[in-house]
Length: 81
Image (tube, rainbow, N blue to C red):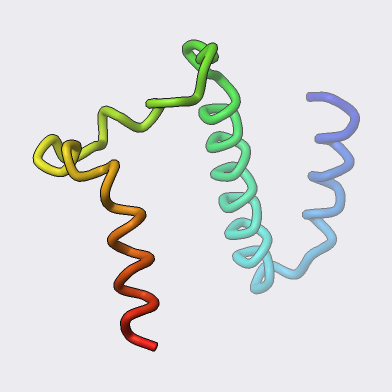
């Protein structure tokens, strides 16, 4: 065990038994954040261009309407006012 972990155990031993559950829950949360960070930090590949990066999530039925969508949204917004 490393010195830092030994120090952590020493501090843990000073905490009353009925309060240790809070420390355990805190450590579980930190472990979860650490694992989540590890998973998101590893990227399979960095795209050369971000255009189309979300195309795999696109609704194919709506793709033909993309060019007109912005103009239609603006028309609707100003027609309401």
